[in-house]
Image (cartoon, rainbow over all chains, first blue to last red):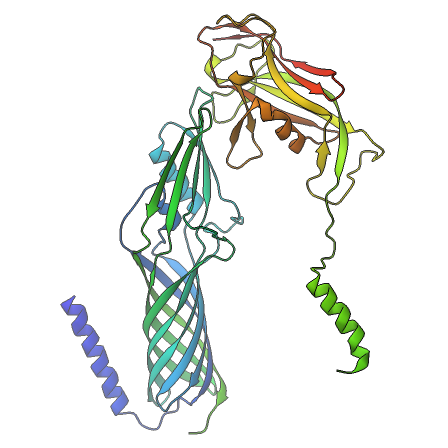
Length: 268
Length: 191
């Protein structure tokens, strides 16, 4: 942790040096559109519940895309509107099926995911809409930006069903795992407050066109608490549990590269 | 606003606020006639039940009966769906469906007795799969019958008699005109 802190201080000092030694900036003031792609990793407290975990534990390696608009509101400060999605790269049917086979050994298991489109193996992707500000440090064609954003992360938790059949028998149990929320509409998802800090490096390469790289850390609260209902179809006995932790935080680290287009140029 | 826009604007607002939708119609209910049925023994030891040959032996704890029912339209619809609805509501002329034993059972149940409580109908169109009491069988059957085609319905033996022996069951549908449609399965040795 101390090493990480040292590196952070060094980076900030270098940026300040760059800022103080800035000559006439070529990076022009104006409205910028940016589109970027990259990688996003999710990290959250490890409170694994094998049967439910594949439905709410987001994996480390995902593709992320971001679209943003940036406009100046001060000499060194810009306002940001950012929209993004994370294309979760995991097969929930495969992972959940494997988890159930471990939890209910020696049974025949059939899983169902209503609304899961063929080819999409997670369901609807998390979306986010953020607003925030950036502090700009410009040097010729370069612009280094420290950014802070707030907004909402929209999650679309998956509902899952399974038939669990005993071999050599007509005994059957059915399992339903669904978000614990009154009136939850799977199409609308669940929104949670999110905060984000990041750094962006922009380089103008030709007239209004630029390229950029950025790194961001986003934190939001988990909306996931799942009801687990196991119903024996022969004797109608029902086992109900609630799994998950609404208080846990989900951290997302994102690294992206992209292109930037200056939509409007302002005079200094 | 110019007067010539008033009429189209009024029509637009009227349609907007009255919830006008193109191409949506109420599903109609079509009366059908049950034209026949056949029944087969099932072996449900594996992941999904399989039909048994007529001379095969069955496995008592995983035994079932598959009833295949046929129906046809009973009015002048000439075999066509009467609307564009994906799921046509069919009105079947049946009041009840029950399972009977045709042989004296080794556990003392006499031939001709109603043994519906020993079975469940597997609603395979439900996700997840649901076992429902035989008293609700006609509701499941009405929802999934297809005019001009044979529709299979699985009845699974969930209260297993303790003794092996020869069993024979029959699914009977009582029609609204008090006639019976009897669909027996061949006798089978269950062990």
